[in-house]
Image (cartoon, rainbow, N blue to C red):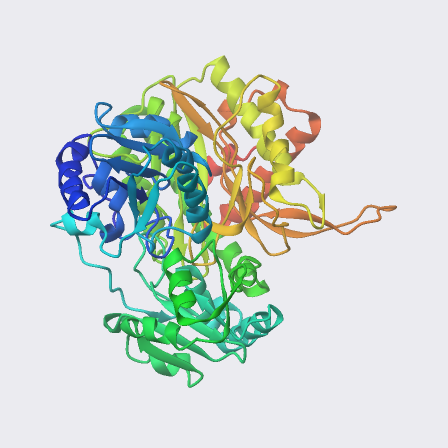
Amino acid sequence: MRQTFDQTTDPGFGARHLPLLRERMAAQGLDAFLIPHEDEHQNEYLPEANERLAWATGFSGSAGAAAVTANAATIFVDGRYTTQVAAQTDKALFDYRELTADGMADWVADQPKGSVIGYDPRLHSPDALARLRRAADRVSVELKPVMENPIDLAWEDRPDQPAAPVVPHEDRYAGESAASKRARIGQAVARAGAEAAVITAPSSIAWLFNIRGGDVIRSPLPIGQAIVDADGKARLFLDPRKVTDGLASWLRNEVSLQPAEALPAALDALSGKAVMIDPAQSSAWYFDQLDQAGARIVRGMDPCALPRATKNAVEIEGSRQAHLRDGAALATFLHWVATEAQDTLPDEREIVEKLEACREATGALKDLSFDTIAGAGPNGALPHYKPTTETIRRIEKGSLLLVDGGGQYLDGTTDVTRTMAVGEPTAEQKDRFTRVLKGHIAMAVVRFPAGTTGHQLDALARLPMWEAGLDYDHGTGHGVGSYLGVHEGPQRIAKAVNTQPLLEGMILSNEPGYYKPGHWGIRIETLQVVTPAVVPEGGERPMHGFEQLTFAPIDRALIEVDLLTPAERAYVDAYHAETWAKIGPLVAGEVKSWLEQACAPL
């Protein structure tokens, strides 16, 4: 599970790989080829074999796209990756554009009339393709599906597809049997007017059948597909190499375990049936196959998505316990940063390894929940920075250290960010940190009417930044799974419009930030779960709020107390008191003495 630092991309990838790709494109009669980051399962974090965007360009971010023609190439990234993409790719080979819903469609509309633009239908959602087709039609450009991806043909040393063992995830962690889940999902399929649903998201496969795997980096996910009938019976399609002893008996008789190669025929057999499938989770290939088979497609959200996101009581208690365990590891790590590291000034590699060692010492860590972000000084200004051999820095006095990491435990998934001063912080650092803290507090204590979306709450976390003419270019909160992916939908808290209400049991991050390019970055992140809120006397509507799950001290040296209101100061003191009460008994010696001081009232 050890995090590596040498598996990175470099600006030379484009120079070496673009000619190989263009050769294959020409052989297929393509003037251009579109490269999304997503793979066949719309994963965010990819198996090495599916890192096509990184292979072609050198860019290793978890969101992006590219478009390659015979003599030019364009990369699309969002605000999190503008600095990273410039560092990892050759400016002489690539143009840079913003990654938006219409960004690639605008690029298509700029291509010469009569151009043939290839795409792999297994990698694009049908809705994204619809936008591209509208743009192509406006300028008389042809969008051509190709079943042999030219990158796959050109990638000579491509790694094998993963085949991690698929194992049961016991009901004592899941809180509900797989049979009960299948019955619920079957009822949802029937209510949608369908006779069956095609499920392709690895997280939904894992949740529905109470199984876990290891095909996706840092996530215990099995890659596969399923067809669930309205009566709750199901067929699960897995690579036979993944099937472990006892898996068939765990799945029981109402689940037919079939090899992955049987899926196309199973889709053909849905001819004449109403079939539910999610256009946001399943690629265009599935829609094409069902359409050709003569099925009636019922577009709708993956029926597992909301049940998976709204955690049951067992999953919530599991998350609490995982965070207590993780909190003790964090206390040990933060003590080290506040003491020994202040003198030895370790580099980012050593910092990452120290945090991972603290989590491994729990004896319960199954994996990291993502590659740890340890940003020293200027590297902390890159929101999704990952230390690599070429970029590793030592921490320096007068600067900041931003560390964002998490663990995968059988009972829960964690994700926490803390920003720490190295030496004496400056007045500017304290001002910015305190504004981020004020936004964090606002999101922690808010009460909101049932039915409120994360989009409607997002401005609360940004207001203290806006008041100073500042902002940050990432979302304020993402959903988190239960021993699943650290990023989970459909819930989120962000500027982007999202119509999904925040429902009781949903776990989300609370992570406002501030980034000063070339200098340092600040982010404070905890996880919190949506709960019912007490309605004040005279209140008329059901309300929701958040329960904090993460307990780790906030660096008091960076807090400008005078910028906090009395209520905000009271929150910090109460949070630290709860952290001391919950985590104090789990640590000992110098760590315990330090934690008591770190959690002292302001």
